[in-house]
Image 1 (spheres, rainbow, N blue to C red):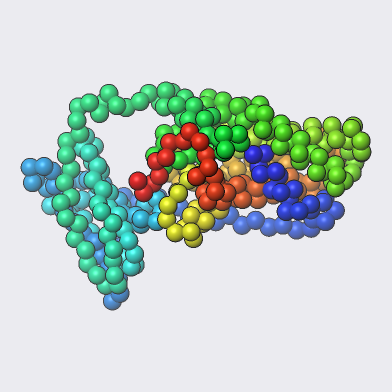
Image 2 (image 1 turned 135 degrees about the vertical axis):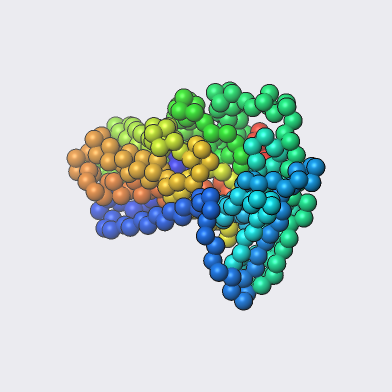
Amino acid sequence: MVRFCRFLLVCGGITSAALSTISVYAQSHDQTPAAAQAQDAPSAAAARISGTVQDTNGDVLEGARVELSKTDSPAILRQVDSGAMGQFEFTGLEPGTYVVMVVRNGMSAFVSKPIVLQPGASAFVPNVMLRVAPVTTSVMVMDKEAASVQQVRIAEQQRVLKVFPNFYSSFDWNAPPMLPKQKYSLAARTLIDPVSFLTTGAIAGVEQYRNIFPGFGSGMEGYSKRYGAAYLTFASGELLTRAVLPSVFHADPRYFVMGKGSTRARAFHAISSTFVTRGDNGSRKVNFPEIVGDLSAAALSNVYYPASERGASLVFINGFGNIGGNMLGNLIREFVLNRMTTRVKHRLPSD
């Protein structure tokens, strides 16, 4: 919603003269596992999980991909291939609750029940059995274009209290990616939404009342200039972060709601999603579209803001205000809007 009112007018009305130095550290944790990741030597308190992959005839299956993750996070911690006797093993594990997923081409996936590991414990995953996928699975594969169009239609129906758009929240953890055409389509739909115009008007009104950016002047003329500048900043940021750069970097512009899990894990997911996002291929990557897009849009604002307001401070206000607004927005999406949004597909990662 216009980056949550420009991060609440940059946390209470920080003006261009008041800003000095702002540092933002983005830590990206590449959690994509290697096909044969080396495992730490187990200590006295380290736990382990093992099992054997079989088919419905009881024959062992070699080369199945076995993935290990925790129940409170969608990230894959480790990945191995089943051996010649169908065996797999994860050692050196910390205490916690884990889930094992096994996949193999042409066969249905296997997902274990939650496995609770105590310090030094060993767990064997029973009945790891893969079934031959039905022939009808080829019919179920949706055309990429059709799947992408469907994602936009789902997003356009998502509104908080049936009024405020919540287009960029995804409640389907396994939602297919959007193609570039649909990324532009959803961004354009956001720009012309009536709520976007009303929110921009409110921002301009507060800026006028508090005399933020005094170079615009006062009266109706000053308000019109503030409105135009605020909308241009919003529009350029929206296009860059939601359409142009996500298409260039093959990144998904949506926020994927966890909806379940510990408060700490959900809060970390919400904040970190500003800096680490999901790629169109499902992998995790640095969220260059958000970071570079917000700062680029802020740099462009030097073109249409008064000469007296231009400079690095303007970039800080608009750029970091939008980055902060994205973090705040993700937290609100995660903890508030996910239960207030209408016409969404409630399919959460732990379902």
